[in-house]
Image 1 (cartoon, rainbow, N blue to C red):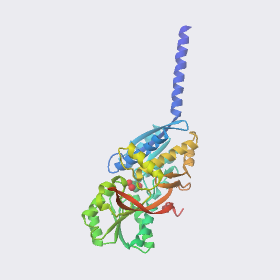
Image 2 (image 1 turned 90 degrees about the vertical axis):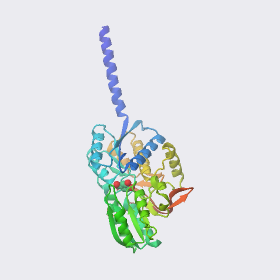
Image 3 (image 1 turned 45 degrees about the vertical axis):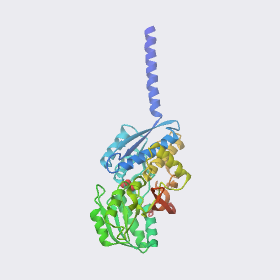
Length: 391
Ligand code: DHB
């Protein structure tokens, strides 16, 4: 009798233990964050992760009764790795959302997995226009190259720049930047005399810059991904391009806030268009900047950090809206149409395209208190991705 009671007790405790565990699993909400933490794009990984972690630190890790768990994986910017890691995160870890995506080929490699498993994929860095069309489960918190390139194409001819050579990294975002800059600049009466493309991996800009020097345009328009701007700037100065009267203009990726201070005075006067500058004058940005630098040993945030921060906000708000009960479809529905004040300015998620609508700023590199900043001098408000204009 006594023995049976003992066994029954053991069985009951065991059952309770098991259901307790199941309950604990049910109450976890997992974010699978895949980023390049090593290799050429490592600054992107570091910035996006820091943005994600800052949002979580400021807003707690319990949302709608769920414990939010972040799982970070390094893909080294190799799309086959991104795809494998995404598959493991969905199948083994049963993540509720996928996020990150340092470069376009990574985002495109994961899109079919998002679709098949109905897992929302928050693209926090990659910026080729077509990415959001690769899966109905993709939502973007970064930007698109057409979005930022057009503003600069409108600015240039009004500011003495009539003849331009373009130089872009030879893949999705570079081709978008080249196409949308060129079309608008020509529409505005400008002339693009040459379009140069450099490899994404380990680019040597020297032979391309020599061509630019020989062509003697009023300006060189560039797109290189975040992290590559410093090398380009250095070689631009070494070849005496600025002294030859050739101005450097580009999307804000080239004067990335993370690296700008190390570029030195050759960066002074460079005009770019972009959606975020650390110098953006708003209370929301001041708060973000202060908290970010405090949490990251004085590291300056760049636009990648803001993509991570805002992308995590999208997930948190969707989780709240669905009261922690929704699957992939419910989360997607709750992310569409979100509108909020980002450190970059006001933004919203276009419900049709799942892409971000935001202000685009014209900026010039200036020195303030001994530090280099992209100082905003004009704004084009609420810019939708022109890459989707035909929809
Ligand atoms: C992409 C990567 C970048 O680092 C960047 O600044 C813009 C776009 C991309 O691969 O999509």
